[in-house]
Amino acid sequence: MSSIRYVLDGEVRTVSRVEPTRTVLQHLREDLGRTGTKEGCAEGDCGACTVVLAELDGAKLRYRAVNSCIQFLPALDGRALLTVESLAERSGHGTAAGLHPVQRALAESHGTQCGFCTPGFVMSLFALYKGQPAPDRKAITDTLAGNLCRCTGYRPIVDAAWTMYALGRSIPTSEQDWLRAPAGSTSRAAAASEAALARRLRAIRRRRGFVLRHPAGTFHAPRTVAELAALRERWPGARLLAGGTDLGLWVTKHYRPLGDLIAVGEVAELRQVSMEDGCLAIGAVVSLTDAFDALAHHYPELSELFRRFGSPPIRNAGTLAGNVANGSPIGDSIPALIALGARLRLRRGMARRELALEALYLGYQETALEPGEFIETVLVPLRPPGLHLAAYKVSKRFDQDISAVCGAFALTLAHGVVRAARIAFGGMAATPKRATACEAALSGQPWGEATCVQGAAALARDYAPISDLRASAGYRATVAGNLLRRFYLETAGQEPGRPCRPPVSPLRVGDVQLEVAG
Ligand code: FES
Ligand code: FES
Image (cartoon, rainbow, N blue to C red; front, side, top):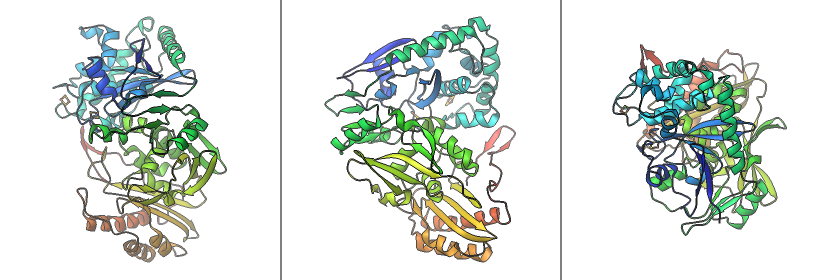
């Protein structure tokens, strides 16, 4: 029987005899009495519970904001946990001068009223403070996309993000520890204190997997892919846990016991992005943040879709393979991956096989994965010549919303003729689904108005969408056809490889953000 070991305010904490699905938020508020971190939605939407995890990234530390309400306690193992109290306690109690620069900036910018959301904003801003030395406005608003404030309004909070750096730099470098030094600081004192934290993390780093046994279920955290494969074969009924951004809700919203769990997050071999035979090979443990960075490098047309996927804390915790394996009909990464011709490398014991991504989905929450099998790698082909690509998300809000329809279009043109077409939609069927009838209507045809009309008509053979809270069936069918037309209008006469349009920023009137969808 093992224990969870993590660092809190410079000290190593050990937790044993704990239910593996106890959340980090429950641990903070109920076990440690650290009630600065708040619970709002308990499903990763509001950001009130945001904390920061520091972890080793080679010789350096990496800081990630995550939602503590849906992170299970074992996710802390080997990491340093930072809460709003960590910032205040380390910076001095009670006086404005003693506040952390992020907190002081929020106070001085009048960025808080009732204060319920404020600890979450502090921690999201802290992750930015440590991660980027000079973010622009887009980077700031993207950082805050997962934090809701109901009474202050965002303008003073954004102002705080501008001023926190100046406040941090005004601290003499000899007095900056790693906590107070902003990204890019050259303070030796800060470097030395950060190195001390890194040493502490190295000291608790595990060489082997660990197991937590509890009457509610056993939690396995393998360290190697071979270990993972053996565990998966031996316990095919255990649930695989990656970022927990979906399974967390089973616990916090449905009070569902999860039974035995196999957590994949510590398998270092699966945390790599590499090039392999003309493909981007994205390991199963690569976070959505890192996977989207790699994909957007090759396919900048997808940047806006990725920016609108969940929020930074969700993308920091969730994995691309987890989104794929989940197979939700509104899993926003999947239509784009299908359009790009992604394949999956599946593993069961020592055996591997490859599967086209679209072949994974057999029905609602039903996949072609065999008992004991898991996704090892997502393989995304590199850009072929002549590719036109676009992905559109249609939802009621710009940020943090669930798609009504998400469509992705990949067309290879030669001399104005469609040589290859791959089109997929989310929100139109029980699973994300390829539009094969539409593709057939386009292939071999000149890329023109008439072909586009035929393709849109063919979508009726591909999909019979349903009505639900997000959209009616008729709306979905109409939007799908209109998105194809939009793609046509944006690509007609355009050089391949250019984004169909400049990345869209939310419209702003003064400091008021108007949200646009699609
Ligand atoms: Fe709302 Fe965690 S409580 S995101
Ligand atoms: Fe009240 Fe943000 S200050 S919710």
